[in-house]
Amino acid sequence: MARGEIVLGCLAPHPPHLVYADNPEQNEPFSEGGWETLRWGYQRLARKLKDIDYDTIVIFTPHWQTYIGTHFLGLPNFKSLSVDPIFPNLFRYHYDLNVDVELAEAMRDAASDAGIITKMMRNPDFRVDYGTITSCHLLNPDWDKQIVTISSNRNRHYYSVEVMNEQATALGEACARAVELSGRKVVMVASHSLSHRHFVEEAPLPEDMSREHIYNHSQYVWDMKMVDLMRAGNMREVIDLMPEFTEQTMAETEGGGLTWMMAAMGYPDYNAEIYGYQSVIGTGNVIAAWDPNEQSREVVL
Image (cartoon, rainbow, N blue to C red; front, side, top):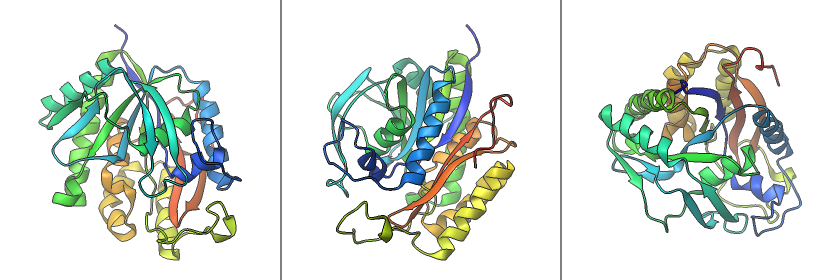
């Protein structure tokens, strides 16, 4: 069997507003647009993915929260209606997705061997979280690839961001071993924003861009610090700063997604491809990718 590999890593924020603004046929509400910087950035990254040979999207989501262990989707297909609990007026999405169960089980086994408590989700009525659906839709709107979804164990809530970093690192390294043994070519996805302080009142028209801005300047300064480090290829420094960044900005990195992906990819020391940065309801969102192939790697923004 050929050796498996991670062919791309993506930081893919999941505000449901972006799907709402795109008006795909799967989503019930209708929008007049909005958040074009992020949507156009996603469209360019999706075109890049079309040119990459890969088998499976492996996504780590902070909105499938598990308090005992790390869980993996464990059935070949999940089909249902996903309704965002905060924005049901924006996101009522009919999904039908296929799971790479063999790879999911291999990752579960590798994580278990590393001492991580794990479980396969085999309930056919389980509703897949909107973080998985939003990021996967925006990266691959054709839904023609199998996925593996990994839950976010809430280490940070029980212990600290430092413990989250350690656990997410161990999980990332275990998943990388499973990918290598599987022979799969994999795109890894960390589904989350950066800074995550957000407004508590919604504009009368959600897509009214005159109302959209970052929550406050300190959030922006922190986000730009992290983006500059990504551009420079200093991913070990990003992960070292993760506890302070997460505490200061209430960042969605607290779920462990970026740490997991960077550990799996061996902390890339090359520049990240930045596809866009924009606020959504006050949160800071950057679309970024790490391409191990020097020939196809580029400076986007």
